[in-house]
Amino acid sequence: MGKILGNKERIQKAFRNEPVDRVPVGFWFHFLTGGNDMNGALKEPELRRKNYEGHKNYITKFKPDFVKVMSDGYFSYPVGAGERYDSPADLKKITVIGANEPWVAEQVALAKDVLALQEDTSYFYNSFSPISNLLYIIGKESFAKILKQDPDAVADALHTIADGLLVLAKALIEAGIDGIYFSVSNPAPDVVTSELYRKIVAPAENYFLQKAKELGGSQILHICGYNGKKNDLSLYVDYDADAINWAVNVENVSLSAGKKLFGGKAVIGGFANPGGSLIQTGAKEAIQDFTQKLLADAGKVGVVVGADCTVPSDTDLSHLEWVREAAAAAL
Image (cartoon, rainbow, N blue to C red; front, side, top):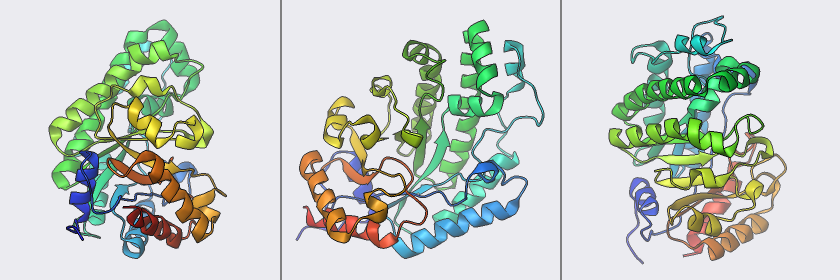
């Protein structure tokens, strides 16, 4: 039997496409119920406690191979309350956040608490892309209007938000986080064509990834297929991330096909994540059979078994353990 690796070394070897003692497994949950809770922790400290307790319960019981630290309660980049965004000039109201602002400080405190739960583990902090944040801040109607009037103003605002997200990323990495789980997608494909995405949106995302890499650690690129939304995967093939996670079952692009599409980079995923899917409701034999077939196709180097996105919060953790057992047996 070969050397048994620690969690951190195993993940880093997988990300570098090096052989491992067993294929790592990574799943993640939301720990708040949704709606206003996802952005309400600055006003309701109880939400931060609930988020931490969710991490604690999951990590203590499952002892995951790596942890995606969820930003539940702090989803959106902070701006002035009640601001209106009706014109390109209004986007100048969005500024780079300071490192001592509560939105940064509270997330760093949360991250430190979660980091203490399990040693020898890679922790990646969730961060939404600049365009997702901008859509949340100004709304789709205003976004579409301003984009039509002045695309450069939108590009500048996205860059400003990217700089603000980097303030948070820097503080998190200095606190011990191993990298950023960067969630991208096209939230408004009827407004932002693939051509516009490449011209207006992608530069800010690539800038974020480049600067985050300079801060240290590894970056996971998550191409979000939330609620079955498809993405143009070709938009992201040149993004500089260490591992790629996309909605395999939404895009109908397998792990093996995606590994080729993304130039041989490490890949994460395989399982569908909606309620009622295999990982939530399947029997042990079915889940383990799926895992083994997944790895027979994708290979066992540069692969982390996981899901398209967050799995239902009531998924029995034994189901995840079944995946880990099958992944270990596949070597």
